[in-house]
Length: 270
Image 1 (tube, rainbow, N blue to C red):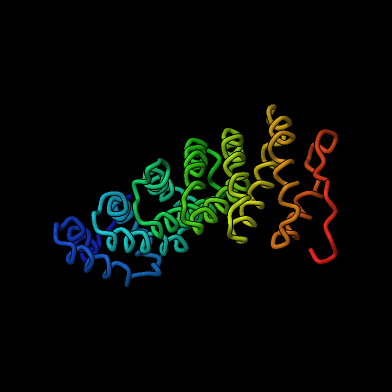
Image 2 (image 1 turned 45 degrees about the vertical axis):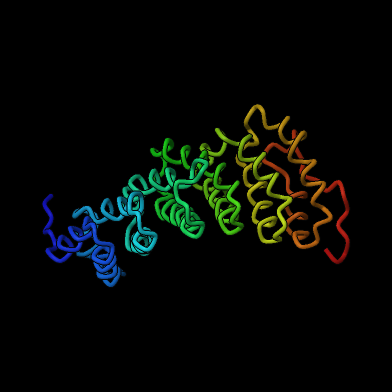
């Protein structure tokens, strides 16, 4: 199938390669005005390599504003695509996001952009959820990346990583099972975070990882040696008491082996 190349987009895409930062920002600002995409623009957006051009700016542009605006345009386009098209974007974008936030020291130095990168990965995975069956390598790499993202000193990024883990538990649980030990250990460490919102999001992720990993052979040892003691310690955290009640009382699919029952009674004010 051949596509009609939109001359205005090609002009703007060529400006993204300009060494002048203002020219790149101007081109990006012009692209952003085209959102949300109409049907004919949606096809051209994929066919004319707009996605690849934006991903390249996210990965390589030295200007923070250009990286941020490129990411904003790309994430703003997600709602215009169906699951199969979103998967194409995910395979182009998520590997770059992994490069930026998946190792220490982080290649993305701006903490707000690290947050937005994880948020965007989470969004595109949800958008492409029904087509992820043949993308295990991608989701496994992203799960591994989230182990590092959980160690970010920026609380918002910790929370975003926790939410992304819960998303993977839903749409690609096998990717969680392969890394459940590292994910669980890092999440448990974050249960001691000073911010209540971070502890609450982390607690959700701990439970989701446990649900996804219950059939893994090493799960029993991890649960009794690490998960259960951590949940017992956090039972005094009144800010997360409602979630603790849920997480400790639910039973896993393997009820004959593990039961999440509260070892510490929760008071009436919890």
